[in-house]
Image 1 (cartoon, rainbow, N blue to C red):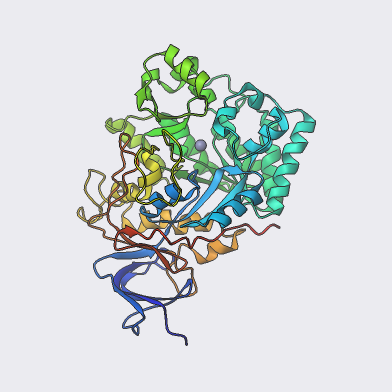
Image 2 (cartoon, rainbow, N blue to C red):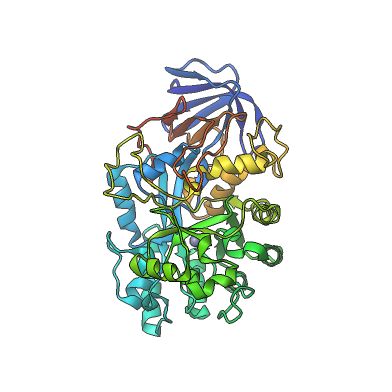
Length: 502
Ligand SMILES: [Zn+2]
């Protein structure tokens, strides 16, 4: 037997699949875990990790942060795989080639993109590198109903990407309220035929928009029932808001009836999207009990003062990112609403991480420490540490360990929802996922090691790139990307993750 390259010695190993929670050594050879046991032989890199938790790296199904600077902030939150499955990419092969050419600190993968396929077929806009994606989603040209010929073109584009290994179909349905519900069913049927999942940003709920073409939650559940597709309900927290109980009840009943509907949530009350989004039009804000002052134009930190000012910003920079205060994190009732999304059975933690926005020219992508001035949503940087703080601990502040892990989910379950849970949602059609989310011999050495007494998020809405605390080491495919709580700037060991087309 070849001797291992790395031994992580004496940590508290938590394997979400077997339920192991005990002090063990872990040996890593190449990109794989080769042994989990006690008293393992020394290795060239032999690290004492006693007192620390050693577990599977976090797998994020919902990451719009796909460039090196933002991914470095993510790895400092324990992320080892970041997948762009909701917005997606078209052509998906181009996204994989771009990532491979630059290298990535974490494993990466992409769904194909209904929105980009639709922009091309319905609005005549090709998916080029400098396309203002969010800005164009705001345009009526994108949001109109598709003709039969246009729908055929959308489905053909998606099918071609699935054949190329796209990890399912991302569907930003909520940005196109005029889409015929039949179109969504056709997209779901395509996913069912290919044996892959859809990842949907739901249409408006009927409580918010009484004349919506179909209730956004009913639509997902109906498509799962009618087509048999796996339907993943993205950020159920931010599209359901205070109607969460009705939506979760609907999802529960669909699951009980055998439909393959899954859910995710992120632990923040505010969202972030392009300020030109259909549902942020001044006259539509009351649907979500919002006023312009609930919007902050992220680049400048300007709180939007009036409907007139909102119209100006939407016209001048429709794709410009805005923080949207959807739920009030200082209101216990709203916090309880958020918690119901996060604690729903088998809901996974997913960040909806956003790209970094720079006020001036984008700095060299390899520059580290991160050059000053970038803004994003704090969920980009702190989702997983915050999930541990809120769900593993008691949610009142401080860290998971200090509070004795008496949170609503506890430590092991919070970790399961951050690694094994997402892996299992994909593993039927994404073979790499059968070796991730687990700490076992033969599995990929994607490992996060953290101090349970110190782990916490630090990014805020005002200071959105502050990295999480308490993450001590992170390995991706057996390579240290974080060591001694410091990023290793030369480490780009991320590998592509692809679906196996049927
Ligand atoms: Zn979304």
